[in-house]
Length: 335
Image 1: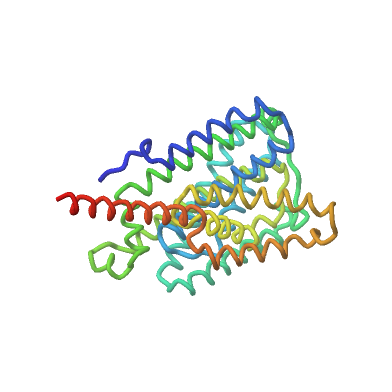
Image 2: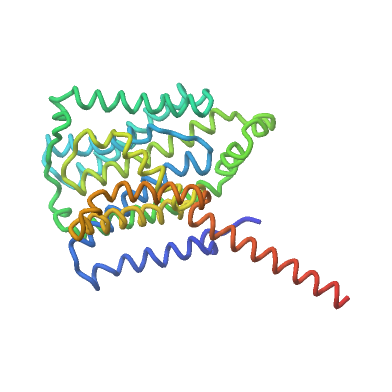
């Protein structure tokens, strides 16, 4: 049965939360909360782009940070060298997305013929190549030191930037939802479930994987651009493996293959970062909060392999099945 996006309970819940977040800064004014939520929106976009690869196509990439970094540097370099205007920012974001689309097409063509683990290793190597190039091309990137840049006056207000990031996150969510529910998205799910069967049905698996890679790369570039704009600073850390791992963990914690899961995962991880960093002032043991965080990650992967949203869906489906069986038994008894 065809599903309408506005009758989808998760989408409706997402929309309600989105509207609440839209009103939030007008009720509760707190600069640090605005910055924290803005970071959550940006990483939610990035994690959703990663979920298109991992959750809906079954591709594990260790080089997704390269597209994030491309977006970040496109905006930063343009704003560093030219007068910052909204038109320039829009053009730089579009340029970064276009560049990422081309790179993801080429990378996909080169690597997606390989088996999953070879693909993962090759994407890691390519991301490393971008990292080295960014560190060596100091005249443009200033190496690992990075550089600051000015942003348009409109973004001097954290509230404006918060609202822009929130709206973009909602647009990306519903755009990807529509993409996944389209015939093309269904083919990607079929490839994820059983690649050989999809191929035997006549689908050109490589072509569809490349399309997924292009979509994911373009959206990752958008999140990278927003990330650089939020900091008003960029350095080569945007190309590192840590960025890809963040997206991977956000997706796994929230729920692989659910779209709303990566959004939830981004919120949990960013809030946990914020909270645990604050605890470091309370007791010295929390200065090693990354170790504690790592343990939580391991436990989450071991005991909740479906993530939060996946586990909830499983419980609801199990309960629904039990109710169906109970109803059938009652009908038989009454009959």
